[in-house]
Image 1 (tube, rainbow, N blue to C red):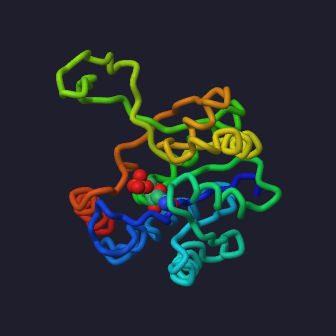
Image 2 (cartoon, rainbow, N blue to C red; image 1 turned 135 degrees about the vertical axis):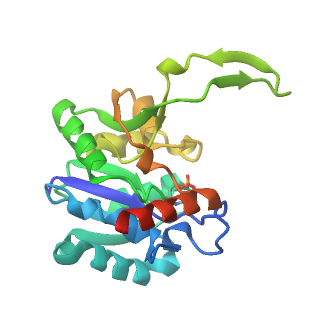
Amino acid sequence: PAVGVIVVAAGSGTRLGAGIPKAFVSLAGSTVLEHALAPVFRLRDAVQVVVVVPADRVGEAEAIGRRAAGKAADHLRVAVGGDTRQSSVLAGLAALWPGVRTVLVHDAARALTPTEQFERVIDAAARTGWGVVPGLPVTDTIKRVDAGDLVEQTVDRAALRAVQTPQAFPRDGLVAAFRVAEDRLAAATDDAALYADAGHPVLTVAGSEAAFKITTPWDAQRAERLLVDRDR
Ligand code: C5P
């Protein structure tokens, strides 16, 4: 397959406070990682998948991956992540098959992301050749504040998007953007920022509320409730 999906799952999950890495926390009977992989293996066209996990979770991730992949198990690899999200993405890029031309980077923590969101991103990337990120309009009013929390400005939210994953890029361009940005990788909160900094266009397409990132215990409770309702 010409499309590769890097699922980064090497975070420690400190803010979730479960005492184990977030992707390995169980929600409604399966791990966050298994929930996150399910839509990837339901895609219309087969993709190659690299799951990036902490060093001591490789065996467990292989077992989870095999379960999620079913007959597509030979399309799955597991790589060891790093201390920052960007170093984990780099490990995923290094593990991609040679034939992959378009790469999607996806947070395992967005475990309920619908298959349609992956399809939308893949289709837009194929159509444009640009970077593509899913995003939602911002519903809260956003203020810029100074160091003393005094409001400086109300930002026009009509021009804002809260962006999610999966984010798609031409593989070669993303690898080059990471290389150029080597000294400021850690400061980037998403891959599209690095890709755009390298001078490439990045298009936003519709995201979905279901693709929220499981970060806090409140998020985990919400995800679990949604999963239980869905399977009922
Ligand atoms: O920390 P945060 O929730 O923003 O992480 C987003 C995603 O990046 C998660 O799926 C997490 O597992 C992954 N990550 C990683 N390696 C790190 C830090 C985060 O793979 N060192």
